Length: 304
Image: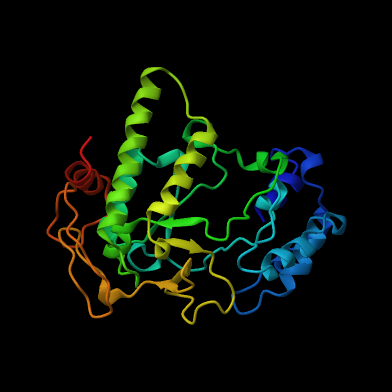
C-alpha cells in the first residue's frame, strides 16, 4: 500500500512516527490484496499493519454498525486507515463515475466551483457538496497531517447535499422544486460576493462562517437533497444508488430520467423539472470532457 512505501521504504519520506504506529513486517505482498467479493481477510491484515493496540478494527466495526441516525465519530487518524481500491481495468468517464463530491468551503461560490458544475453537467454526473473538514481552499489538507487533527468528525448522518440542478440532469429519482433552485442560487451568489470582498481585503473566511452558511442551506432546501452515506443493505441497487435521503428514500440514478440542461419537464415518476432562469442553455447533446469544452460551457452557463 501507499503507506508501506512511505513508512517502510528507506528511499521514501517518512511521516511522523507518533501519528502512525505500524508494523512493516505485517504487509507481505498479496496478503494485503482482495476483491469486492472477497475482502474480509483485509480487516485483520489492516489491524496487524496499524498495530493491534491502535484499535483500528473495533473502531471500523463501530462505524460500520452504528445506528444510521447516530454515526460513530471519526478521529483524525481514521482518515488514513482505509481500504483503497485499485481498479484492474480501464475506467471510462462516461460510465464509471458514480458521484462527484465537492468541498463546500473550498469551492462554493468560486469560479473553480462553477467549472466543476459545468463539467458535471456536460457529463450528466451527480454532484454532491460536503462541508467535510471545513478547512477552505487556501489551506487545504496535507494527507499525512490528518493523524494530528484534534476533535471528532463524521457525526452528521446526512453530510452530503445534492446539487439540485445537476440532480435533475443526472436523472436522480427525487423531486427538485423551484424553491430548491432559488435557495441554491441565493446561497451561491452570496458566497461569491463575499469571496470577492475577502479577496479585495486580502482576508480569508473563518471556518465558522462556512459552517453558518452550510447550516442555513439545510432548512431552506428539500429533505430529498440531503444524503446519508450508502450503508450495507440500505438500498437494493448499490450500483445506481448514491445514498439515503432525510426522507428515508434511496436516491438513485435512473438513466431514463436524465434531462438536458436547457429545460426541465415532468416525468412519469413525478420528478418535476422546472426551467432554471439565469443559467443559460445548451442544446442537450453530449459533449467531450476536454478543457476547451468545459470552459465554453462554464462561460455560457455561469458567467463571471
